[in-house]
Amino acid sequence: MTGSDEDPRVAELRTAVSRLRRELAAHPAEFPDRCIAEDELAALAAMTIDGAPEIPRLRRSLLLIAGAIGSVSALARGLSDVRNAVDLFGEPSR
Image 1 (cartoon, rainbow, N blue to C red):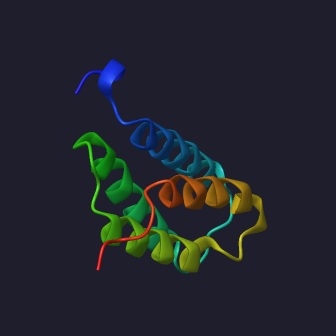
Image 2: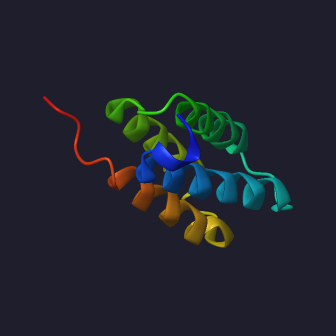
């Protein structure tokens, strides 16, 4: 896919994930689940490369990231941006 025909939801997700990854990398404090957040953000970033991510996998990653960094107030806005980007994909089909 080229930039002109890329799904705007994927672009939004990629931007939000990239921003949160940078914020997390710059955050000085260590916390127990930091590596979980880093791993799941890397997984989300990889999903944006292939085009249309799997919605259940997106939501699972979001839950793991939220659980890992949800109590770090300095990362709250970035986490909210990622959540909003995931929400653009809607609910998984059942």
